[in-house]
Every structure is written in C-alpha cells, then in structure tokens.
Length: 115
Image (cartoon, helix red, strand yellow):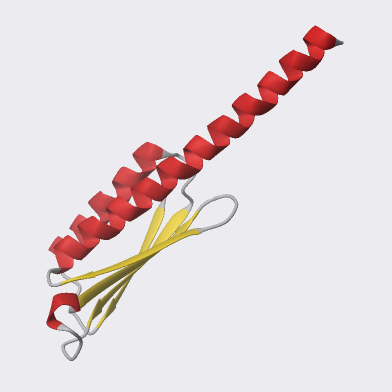
C-alpha cells in the first residue's frame, strides 16, 4: 500500500511519519484490498483549541473509496481516532460483502432443492 502524507501548517517529523505509517499499515490487516492512502495533517491555531489538529484520510479501495476525518487537541489522538473510524468502515464493508455472497449462495442452494 502506498501512503501519501500532506502536512499543512506543521512540520512533518520522522516520528509523525512513522506513527501514521504504522497506524495506516494496520488497516491492511483488516483487508488486503487497500490500494493507497492519502493523509492530510492540518494544524489551525485560530480554530477551536479542542480541534487544533485535523487529520483527513482518503483510502483507495476497489469500489467506492473510504473517507474519514477527525479533529482533536493532540495530533496523535486525532490520528488514532481517524484510524479507528476507518477500521470500523472497513469491517462494515467486509461484513456486507460476506453477507451478500452468503445470501446469494443460499438462493442458489434453494433453487437446486426446488428445481
């Protein structure tokens, strides 16, 4: 998976880069179909102090892409929150796909029994 980081109004350190890469990399454990991720890290001093750091993530996956954004006082906390949102969305997507194939398999089995 390719990860593209875009810092806005903050300095991208090796620690931040490594943390984002680690957290986004864990999303690949949920599904191997993640093609790439674009992460935007924003810092706005004039915004509400409780939302000084904003993290926006765009995951490229087959089908509709997945987006999430989160704001917090701490950059690392915002990264944690956004990765939790993305993990939830990926699990939900996987569950839907599994249920879809399961229901289609059941319909095929019922046709064989009746036919």
